[in-house]
Picture: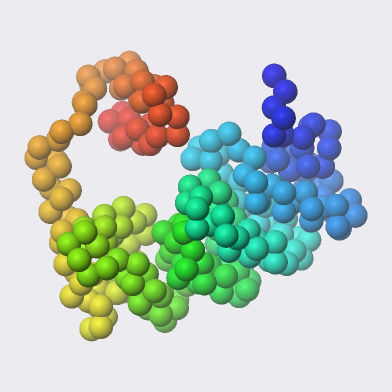
Length: 241
């Protein structure tokens, strides 16, 4: 069935949207302006049906390097006023992941853009995870005031901070901040609170639990997907399996 969000497969844009290997060859052979326009269209409007199961960021990052692409379009996308309203990971996740790969290839402009977005952007957790893999200790320590400042010193703010620490994919920044005399006591308290919450949930699970057969686990995951498309129960199902 034709998907109106995806260009025809014979076009340069269609090839890049599908992640085709010959898409890179066509992009390098096309006029540079046309290739850059197609590349930016893909990075800023994620063409994947499910971003959680299909990796595409390295593909686009390498093409950015081959085309010597600037980052002005990505910067405008990340700091667009929509970022204050639309906080869904799908809007900025691919662009942030591309910046992460570019930073790992030595693009200092990508690293600076990630730092800036981690300090002020809506999807700051993703940017911080990218930086945790690529930035040095000095750069990560400098982000502590901006990130921790997102959480007011109230019981609600402390609970949100504990949830953020617990949910981080990359714990390195939080470990650095826990050892910082200026922020350590608060971060360590959040780490302990998160560990205690996890222990309590393990002792008294309150959510629905599937049977332990493969079929039961898959049915359980599918039921949630039918009710809430995009929910992350498949991750829990994978752990059960």
